Length: 295
Figure 1 (cartoon, one colour):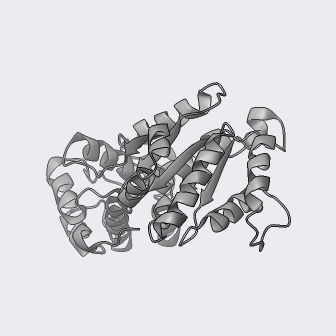
Figure 2 (tube, rainbow, N blue to C red):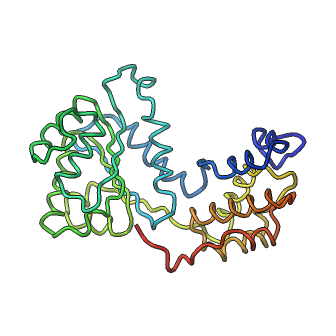
Figure 3 (cartoon, one colour):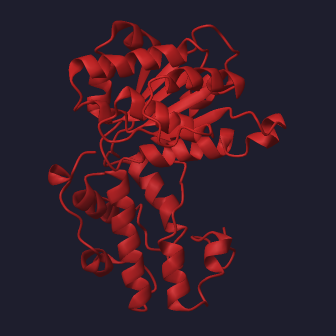
């Protein structure tokens, strides 16, 4: 923290004398705050990564509503454990962690093509052949992939039951290669995974929940405030302000960040020293969580 402005990180405090535009860019920069809800998910992922190789490795389903930070957590894990795999293994051909976004209407051929592209396999960018799966399995082993993260796993939900089963068989096939699968998605993903008893038995389910109106949200807001280049403390984690933020966002992680970012930007634009009640009211009003799109 900065000595003159103890509520701010040193890098943030250095921006207090910069133009408004620079401070606004800083406020809206994507960042990851290691908060209480993210810690158990990251810990579970790292436990899987650090487990010795085995015939049937543990798998994980990370489940949560839209905008709860699942993607941010997965990206942080990828950066920590697999983002620069050459530093870990010293081998450009090894990819310990691979993350793939499952396409809409995620049939098995489409998912295999997405994995092939992520693995850097040449010649499969536009292929429609089901033989791609055989090459994917071999490449996962050759590149010593430990974890395959399948984002938006709920994209298999619109498929007919028989096509969903083919995707679930692919998950089992990947697991049988010694690769841990981490399926990330909404509640629909958990339901789909439960359709196959073998897949369900291999998958530990861990949830990313909304913040409660208590200490977890208070700690998150306190950390978030340290990134806002405002000269005076805003007290985002104090009870009255925390309750105000909770009423607007229902504790949904992405909505909390968006609301606070908008309030901080309003305060900067209007030369306010901190985020006060007026800044919070003047900030961008978010749609109710009850009508937010799940996806």
